[in-house]
Length: 145
Image (cartoon, rainbow, N blue to C red; front, side):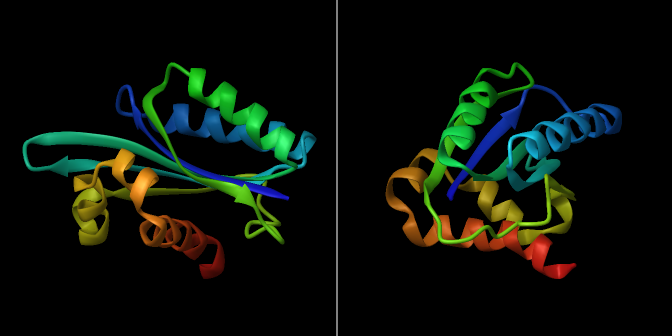
């Protein structure tokens, strides 16, 4: 079993219909390829700038996770795709979710505001503790249910 966590920046504000289409397609694809995971879409104002960011965890057979991530990197709906963490795992953390989803407003969450101030490249290179915190953050949506 393999897991991968990444962040990216949406090219534009994602409308609810576009997010629903991403989820519909993702859930179908993931079910057919034995993948599970969670997608968070975060948007809002930080200072004078409007931000739209994705955080996603994928898990499943290593070859399937890596192949999907390569396709995700090419998707024109986002840019600055930054791999935060990847590797073998003993068991799935999202075992009953073909693709969980959470949409959050940046203004309502001080922790997310701090995350947006961080450089994802630095987290990916230097931040094992931060990597684990990000994974715990994503798992919290699943554990909450």
